[in-house]
Length: 242
Image (cartoon, rainbow, N blue to C red; front, top):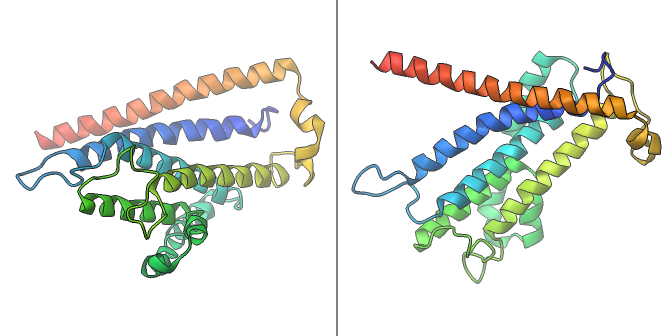
C-alpha cells in the first residue's frame, strides 16, 4: 500500500479490525465460560456481571493489539518482531510480581502507573474481581468506582480507564515511530511532523476517497477471513468429535 501511495493507517486499521473480530469472539466465549454453571458448586464467577466482565476482556484485548502494534514498529523483520514481541509480552507481566506483595502499601498513583503495562492492569483487574467475588457482591456497574474496602481506593473502573489510556499511548507511539521510521517502502517524516499542516491537509480529495474505499474493502475482507477461520475450526472440531 505504501508503494501505491496510500497511508499507513489503512494497514493498521485493517489489521486491527481482523484481530479485534477474532478477539471479540474469543472474549465472548470466555465470558460465557466464566458464567456457565458446571455443577452444584456454581459458576467460576458467580456474582459478577457478565457484561462488565466482557467489557473488561474486550478492553484488555484492544490494549493487547495496540501493544503488539507498538512493539512491531521497532523491527523491520517480521520473524524478529514476532520473537521479540513474545518475549517483551511476557516481560511486561513481570512487574506484577513486585506490585502484588506491595499492593497494600502502594499509593493510588503508583497503582495507576503500574497499569500503564496492560498485562499488569489485567492482573490487578483480575485480582479485584476475585476480591469482589469473595465479598459476595461481584463486580457490577454500580460498584466499579468504589474500592473493595475503605482502606483501598483503587477501583475496577480505574482499571478500565487505564486500558483505554494504554491503548492510546501504544497507538500514538506506533503512529509516530512508523511515520519517522517507515522502513524500506515508506517516505520518512521529519520528527516534528505532527505540527506540520501539510501532514494533516496535504492530500487531495481523490486520494482520501480511495483510502476510504480501500479500508471498507479491507474491513469486509477481514470479516470474511474471520468467518472462514471460525467456520473451518468449528467444522474440524465437529468432524473430530463425531
